Length: 115
Image 1: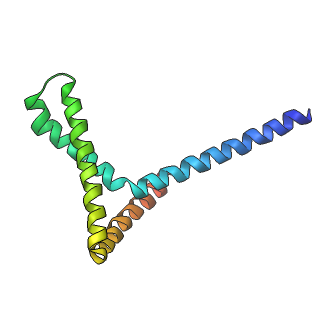
Image 2 (image 1 turned 90 degrees about the vertical axis):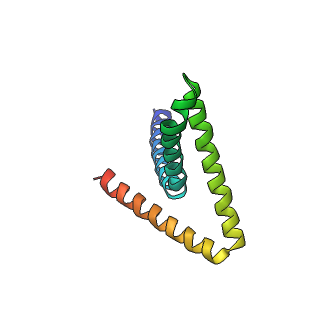
Image 3 (image 1 turned 180 degrees about the horizontal axis):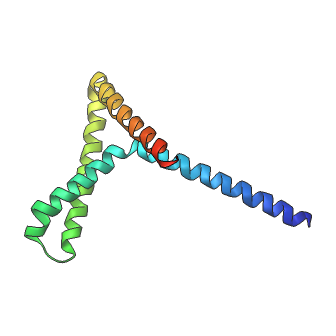
């Protein structure tokens, strides 16, 4: 009987730990990757609308959308890192602005999500 109680308590603690981990992971993702996600979606949309549908057909449309979106996110990340390394003051200001908007979005999402 004691073994079942121990297993039950461990299961509850495991669920609480999992939900805590999942919650903090979602907050981290929205704080650190929101700009990249927005860029990915925008590139996907414009590539799909103005390029892929005109120059390819079938599943190749989605292939070119994915390639263009990943390339845009990679270039954005590379340019942001170069800007931050070369011009640290400007990079810090841009980083502060992006972090501020990410924080505002995460706060707004959490306030409307949970109540």
